[in-house]
Length: 300
Image (cartoon, rainbow, N blue to C red; front, side):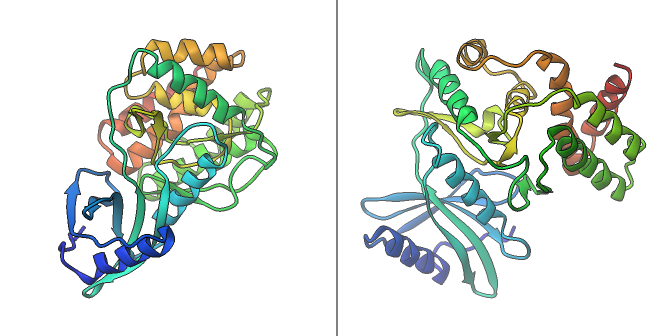
């Protein structure tokens, strides 16, 4: 991404938007680039008395950061687990380039105390137990990383996950020349695998790995969501993919909201969605890992 300079009309525009929504004058005196994700650039902007965290991406397609703001708002509406508060979002011009921006509450992260992971388990379980009346999916598609996440709604979890999680990812890979398995047959196998599993619809984070979990002096925080209504086990499975969370988390989560019978058998299938996405985005060893996972599932 082309990096915008610090002293531009764009920062003035964003400052004016912050001032408008907070009803407090904010003048950006400094914008400092910080490490961010693969999909955007990140900045801390500050005045004499306040600072905010800002995500920027060139506005050359769907408004990905708008979907992120909606996901954060959905989690916040449950009053269960904290996330960075959404201040404002929109599109601003910088010279000849337009940027989509998302302004978030600035948080100071710390190391969790002795009870931190227990508190996180309790609050995540509360999120998963928040009453949801919608069918599986989401009212609109959103994003998981750079990949469009298809959220066509369905009353049947097995159908939703088989077609709009596994099937879509396999089709995306096939369009790039990577046909890992006969798609229709594997989608049918996935649907059969889950046909007797009827989870309670839960609001899930959707991309819950350790890099999207933090702690402040006020407790745990989750961010960078890819939300939808789904099986809460998908969140738990994701936490085990890139190094498990501390065992205290799993022990306390199970105490708060026990996992359903057969979870261990479903875990690898739920992780396959993320393996396929990583294979799509990064290729390399993720492709071989996804192929191996598919073969293992076919042999079960």
